[in-house]
Length: 69
Image (cartoon, rainbow, N blue to C red):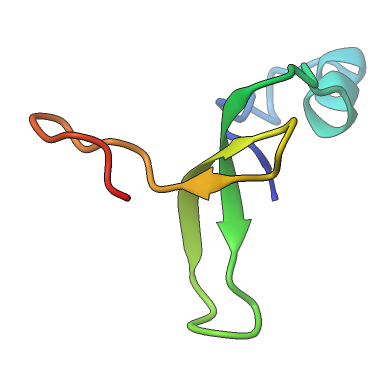
């Protein structure tokens, strides 16, 4: 599980940039978009939004639709 962000190119990234990508997070309070792996269920990756202050989770809004409950 973790923040969704672009993966740097391993061929051109410096060790410091790679270390930052692997270990440093923004750690913001409030809603953040994360990637999760459903290991004990369907064994697929999914993207969801989670409130880091309450651990409430929701599916992200799809374009042209409202937020799903």
